[in-house]
Length: 238
Image (cartoon, rainbow, N blue to C red; front, side):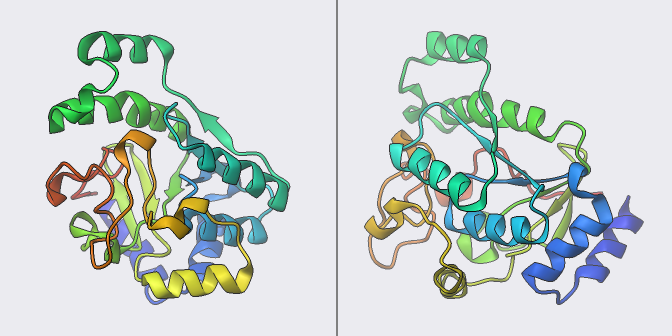
C-alpha cells in the first residue's frame, strides 16, 4: 500500500483541483469514488466540480439530526441546481437512544470524551456505512483550516476506514476558495454571511470574531488540538 500511496502522490503532485478530481474518477471509477459533503463552502465547490466532470458521481452527507435549518435549505437548493440526489446517512436510532440515556440531550458539553462519543454515534459510525465498498473518498479539507490539518497531503491512506482519501483543495486559501465559488456562482450556506466559516451541528457551532481561527467556532469550549469529530484521524499511514 505504501508503494501505491507514493505512486498516487507523485501522480497528483502540482495538479489543479479539476485535474485531481479527473484523476480520481479515472483511477477509482465513479461507482467506487465518493465525495463527503457537509454543505460547507469547500464541499460545495467540490460538488460543483465533480458533478461537472461526472453527473452521476456519488455525493453523500451525514445527517446527524442536529443540523441548522439553513443546512437543509442549501441541500435542497444544491440538488435543484445540479439535478442530483445526495446519499444521506443517519445514525442508528438505537445508538442515539443509548447515547441520550447515558449523557442526556447536551451531555457533549461536559468533556472531550463525551463530545467524541456523540460524534461517534452521529458521524463516525454512519461514515463507515457511507464508505462501505468504496475505494476512495474525497474531502474538502484544507491545510489553512486549523492546527489539526496543517500536514494534510493531496492523497492519503485512510487506515481507519481502509481506503484512499483525496483532498483536492489541500493548498487552497480562503480567498482562493471564495473567488472560485463566486466566479462559478455556486450555492453556499446562508450562515457564511453571518461569520460562520465552518458549520457543523447547531449546538456545536457558533459565529467567529474577526481574526479568529476559521474553525474556532466549532466545539469552541475545547482546545484547538481536540477539534476534530473523528472522521479525519491523523496521522494516516499505509
